Image (cartoon, rainbow, N blue to C red; front, side):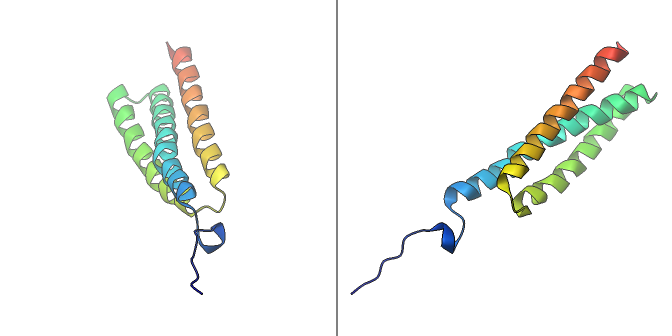
Length: 105
């Protein structure tokens, strides 16, 4: 009697979970990095740094943030937490940057 194997969550992650984890790392990481760039740029500009210098420093720190959260999203045990932290963190930082920018104008 031949035995067939079927994909099961007991034997490894499903394709959907892997795709969701990669999506969280790429898209959620991008949202988080976007928020970090916006917030750092506004904070440095508010501290008196020239806009273009603040923008450059924000982009550098945003790249570093992306390089940190990307592998974290792949390695973390809870996929839902990764999505929540990355998307909510990016949204909060972007909102705070927008609020601070409107206060500077």
